[in-house]
Image (cartoon, rainbow, N blue to C red; front, side, top):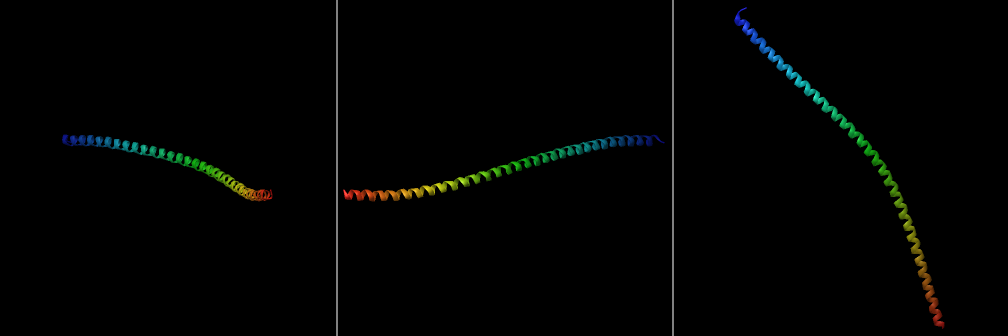
Length: 115
């Protein structure tokens, strides 16, 4: 082997070692990127699960509030019916009082006419 061949082989080996180190660094960097992406994905999956659980709790609360609103609307309707019924009674009694007042006025007028 000649000195020139030996030098070329050494340079080639040195270049190859540098290339191998560079490739190993790139592999480590890519592996780190993959791990970071997996971690980010895991965080997103946890966020999705937490959001779904929160949405479920909100839907349950909404259902309870809707039921309470229906119950209160029913109570309001009953109160409105009772108010209408009592107003009708008041109107009826007012008409009766008016009628009795007219009769009283006629009777008083008749008594005054006789006197």
